[in-house]
Amino acid sequence: MSESSFSRFIQAHKVAVAVTAVVGAGSVAGLLYYMSQQNAGLDDSESLKPKKKSKATKKKKKSEKSGTVVHANWPSSDIPIDSTTGLPNVTEELVTKMTKQQQSEWALALKETGNQYYKAEDFKPAIQCYTLALLCKADPVFYANRAAAYAAQGEHQKCIDDCTEALKLNPSYPKCLLRRAHAYENIEKYEEAIYDLTALTIYGGLNDQSPESILERNLKKLANKINEEQYSTLPKELPSSSSISSFFGAFAKENVDTDESKYEDQSCSQFLAKALTEIAKDTYEDYVKADVLIHQAIASYEKDPPKADSKHAGLAYEYQGTFDFLKGESESAVSNLNKALQLNPRGRTHVLLGLVNADKGDFLSADQAFAQAIKLNPEDPDIYYHYGQLYYLMGDLEKAKENFEKSKLYNPDNVFGYIQLACIAYKNGDTNSCDEQFKDAKKRFPTSSEVPNYYGEILFDRQDYGGAAKQFEISARLQESLPTFNIGALPLINKSAICQVNKDIVGCEEILKKACELDPKSEVARINLGQIYLQQQKVQDAIALFKDACRLSRSNDDRVQAISLMEASKIQLKIKQDPVLSKKVHEIMERAGLERGL
Image (tube, rainbow, N blue to C red; front, side, top):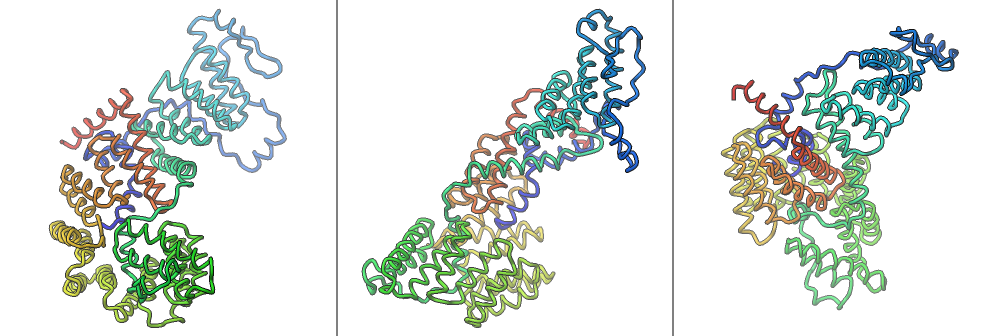
C-alpha cells in the first residue's frame, strides 16, 4: 500500500487497534467483536430517562409548580414529613435509631421517589431524595441515580464524584462508567473519559449501545486539543525526502542555466542557480539548503529590485511558495505564488496555486487555477499531469485519463504519467491493460524504483502477495542503487504489509526498522512500526514512535491521527497496569479462544 493507503487504514481502525493492543498479537478484531456481543445485567430501577411528553403535557407542566410527584408508600407513619418540601425529614440521628431492615426499606422508598422526580425532570428534589437514601444506606445505584440528576443539571464534577463513589462499591458498573465518561468529556478531561470507555468495553459494555463511537469521539477531541496546545507552534519543516522527490519529479525539468559563475556574486540569479543545483541532488539535507538559498535569492531581489532579473525573481518566489506548500504553510504559499505571477507569469505557478487550493479542499478555485495555466501555455505537460491528479481525486477517471494522456504526449519522460494511466486501467477493471502498461513503463524507465513499487501495490490489492513482494523487493533494490532518493522507504513499508499478511511479525519489525533508518522523516514508517510494537506489547516503544510521528506529520489530519494512536496507547498502558482490568482482558481472550475452538 502507499503511504496514504496505510494512513487511511490506520485512521479507520485506530480505535480497534488501540483498545485491544494490550492483549497481544492477533487479538484486535476478535476481542472487539467478542466484547461487543457481551451483555451486562443492570438493575431495572436505574432506567431513569425522563419520559417524552406531548406538547399538551409540556404546556401543562409550565403552569404547575414542582413537587407534584406522587410519593412512594412510606413503610412507617412514624417518619416525619417536611411540610415545605413534602419529603421525609430524615436525619442522621433518626437513621442511627433504625434497624438495618428499616434503613434498607426507607432507602428503597426514597430512591423510588427520587426516580419519580427525575422522570418528571424535577432534579433538585430528586437529588434530595437520593441523598436521603444514601444517608440510610450506601448503595451504588443511589450514587448512580444522583449522578444522573447532577448530570441533567450540568453539574458535571458532582456527577463524576458520585460515579466514583458508586464504582468504589461496584467497579464494573457499566452505566456509571459511561455516565462518568460523559461528564469527563463535558469538562474536557478526555483522557479520563477514554479510560472509562475502554474499561467499559472490557467489562462488557451495555445492552443497548456500544461505547466505541463515544470512545472514537473522545479520542479525536483529545488529539485535537493536544495538537492545538502542543504542536500548533512547532516550526514548519519539510516532509520526507521521498515526498519532496515525488513532488518535484512530477514536473518537467526546469530550463534554467545553473552555472552560478555566470551570475553576479550574491545576486538573486546566483542564489536561485545554487538552489536548483541542491534540489537536483535529491537528499533531505540538500532540499533544506535549497530552501535557505531561495530565501536568500528573494532577500537579494527585495534589496534592489531593479538590479535583479525579474524572471529569476519570479522563479524564486515560485519555489518559495512550493517549499511553503510542502511544509503545510498554505497562506504564505499563496502569497509567494501570487508574487511570482506578478514578476513572471507562467503555467506552473498557476498549477501550484491549483494544488494548494485542492489541498485545502477548494476544488472550484483549483479548477480555475488550472484553466488559467492552460490559457498561458496549452502545451505545458505539468498542467495536464496535475489536472489529471485533481480529476482523479474527484473520482472522474475519464477526465483524469484524458489529462494524463496529454501530459504523457507533451512530456514522455514523466514516469508518473505512465503509472497513473496504468492505475486508472486497473480501477476501470481492465487488469490486462494495467499489466501491459506497467510492463511498458518498466521498459521505458528500467531504473525507476517507482514503477515496480506501484505495480506491487496493484498486485497486493489483487491479493497476489507473492507477486507484490517480488515487485517491492525490486523497487527497494533499485532505490538502494540510485544516487537520488526517489521513492525512499516506501517499498520497504509496503513489503512489511506482506509480512503482516503472512503473520511474520518479527520480519515486519525488522523491515520497518530499516525503513525508519532509511528515511528519518517518514512518519508512516514510524506509525506502522509503532503498531507492530503494540502487537508485541512493547507499549512504551510504540508511544515513542507515535510521538516522533506527531512531530514529523505535515498536516493537522495526519498529526491528529498520530496523536490519537499515542494517547490511546498511553491508556492501554494504564489498563495493563491495572491488575483487575488486565486480568479481565485475559479472561475474555481465553473465553473467546475456547468458544472459537482455538
